[in-house]
Each structure stands twice: as structure tokens, then as C-alpha cells.
Amino acid sequence: IHDYATGKVAWFCHRTKRGTGHNWEGTSVGAEGDMFEEMMRSVKAPRFVVRKTITDKDSSINVIFCRHFPEGTITYCANHCAKTLHKDLLKIKQYTCECKATNFGKCKCMT
Image (cartoon, rainbow, N blue to C red; front, top):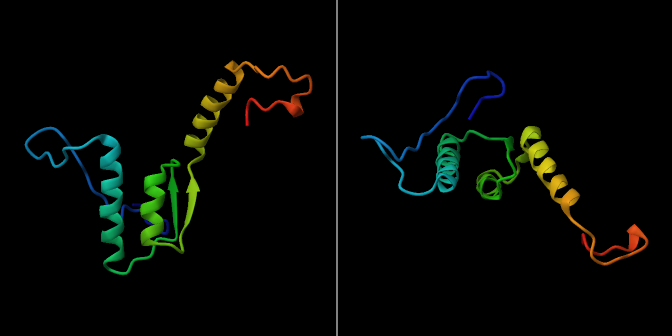
């Protein structure tokens, strides 16, 4: 977690499945949520307040953040959003309308 005012790292944690210091047995997806939960607890203990988080649309991270800081705001990372949008647009481009609607506004395939 970076302190916006100073730009310094305020909190961090690490999970690894390899080597002598391994501390995680689950999946990488699970590790992300577990680390975020640990950091939110660490941040909240000294009554530090997180007002805003920037995430990659990971719903588990958003749930954890809102549980600890319900007054905070969530902003989605523009880079991740652009990548997701590009993938979604490619799916739409490859999709073939099957309803044979003559007016695009009446097509129900994409709803």
C-alpha cells in the first residue's frame, strides 16, 4: 500500500509457494485476496484510514476493502479496464447475430 501524500510504501506483505520460507499453499488468486485482507487489518489496527483504492475490478478485493473501509471509494485501474474492454470488443466482433432482426435496435442477441 502506497501513501499517496509521500509516495512511500506504507504496508506490504508477501506470499510464496517456493523455497524454505514458503508461506502459502493455495492458488495465486487466493493469495491476492489473503494478502489484501492482511494489509487492511494491519492498516486499520493503528486507526489509519484508507479513503481510496485503485483495483483491477477484482470483486473479492472490492468486498474486502468495503468491509474494512465502507466510506472509501473504489477506482478501477485504467490499464486493466482498457485490456478488459479490448477483449470484450473482440468477443462482440466475432459474435454472429442469430435472430435475423432487420433493425439492429430490435436485435435481442446481445442482451
